[in-house]
Image 1 (cartoon, rainbow, N blue to C red):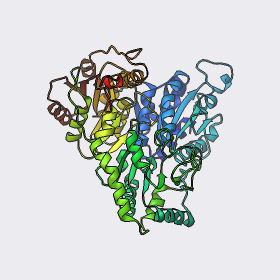
Image 2 (image 1 turned 90 degrees about the horizontal axis):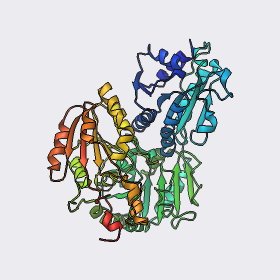
Image 3 (image 1 turned 120 degrees about the horizontal axis):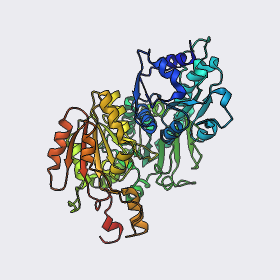
Image 4 (image 1 turned 180 degrees about the horizontal axis):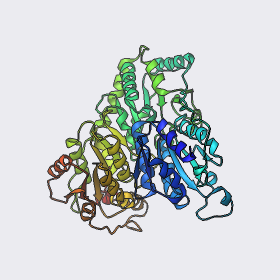
Amino acid sequence: MRAADVIVKALEAQRLTRLYCVPGESYLPLLDALHDSKALTTIVCRHESGAGFMAVAEAKLTGRPACFMVSRGPGATNGSIALHVAEQDAVPVLMLVGQVSRDERGRGAFQEIDYSQFFGGIAKAVWEITEAEKVPEIMVRAFARAASGTPGPVVVVLPEDVLDDHVTRPLPLPYPISRPHAAAGDVEAVADALEQARRPLLIAGGMLRGDQGAAVLAEFARAQTVPVAASWKNQDIFDNGSPLYAGHLGVGTPKAHVDTLARADLVIAAGTRLGDIASQNYTFPRAPDPEQPLIHIYPDSKPIGAVFRTTLGVIADPVELLSALTRHRPRHVEERRAFAESIRSFVEPFSRFTSPEPTDGVDFGMVVQALEEAAPADAILITDAGNFSSWLHRHWRLTPRNRLLGMVAGAMGFAVPAAVAAALEAPSRMVIAIVGDGGVLMTGQELATAMQYGAKPKIVISDNGSYGTIRTHQERRFPRRKSATDLNNPDLTQWARSFGAEVFTIARGDDVRAKVRGALAADGATVIHVRSSLEAISAFTTVRRLRGEG
């Protein structure tokens, strides 16, 4: 077979069902090989960043590696944003990228890039295949590398002339992904620390995603009476209505909330790398010397002890270790329950939505509240980067029946492509994506992809005519000195309708609940265009308050 045919067989062997791409002449033989595949659907996207974001979303949703393909040069640089998101968010993604032919390498040929240098600081591995006989081995290794340890992106570079070369070596079976197991002594050490603790707290990260992880986390919290704080963008791994839910450690978490959590006498970080947002800019736990004993459980040694002095670091699957701990009998149950109640006394009122309606547009919090009321209990929720997501993070009571797809990396433009991929991957579930006017005009053209392939996401646009997050920082640091944050938008209702989507527009004075119910009941791809308030700039503050006027 040609190398291109072997690559397709390798993708099929990894149980992929779709690929995302913008086609390019640098990998034409691979596109030709895909023509005969019965197992793979090629999703043609409108921009390489959209293709990459779709792969990231699929991998987040399934927990398995996903793949996108781009052409050399500009295609690769456009796709790099998704690789950075995959690295920051620990998502297993494979990018196949075309390259100039082997005889042109090193000559500064048309669209030539040294991908090892370009992606070396982002990707877990970059392999350029210069010998067709190595295609079978490298393809299998690429998927294993993406999924093992801390998951992340891998790049496989395909010189265009290699794809036509013939391969005689057989394709290896997919490599099993090894997961480190906690030693019995580690389990006992964690159990002993828990036994002594009167106010333990668990910070739960994305490695606890999935049905099994969420079930084990809930069982551990109940068995040990341990409050659980969700790390950034991971509220869906624990029932937000549970008396043991300790809130969300994200952007905008109030100091009073962190101070309440900091009363803990033991912190267990499980399944999180404890980055700057999860640790509230390295204040909880405090770097480099935490005020509480810190136990860090993660399946990769790299983040353990890298920033914080760690009392006990356990390189293990956190799901397996927490499951083992559920068998231990807890002590100090009443004190732990009281600690959990003290946390809930802050979290409960803080999560309630109350806001006077502003005069310059719709309070976007009212829309999020209406969405929560009308959405199915198992809705998949997607957030783009921006202040509008703060209402979801603060007020929407998520459960493990939901799936929240957001980005730790904070890249704009994720939501619409992610919604397309999620709707294709899970057609029986409602997919609701929340995006701002800035983000939707970066990658919103992927609505065309949704229409082409019959995806039916619900896209909710907060249109306040501003890069709101930057405006927030601007007003806080330089009050009344607005600069480079205003947006002059097209009519987003007409824009969305031009793709063939059904559009519902919500303006000030409209019945928000009725409009939202109508949009969620509509069949097909649907857009809710919200003419939202700029004064009510986030779920935490207003422009007037940022200026010290209220």
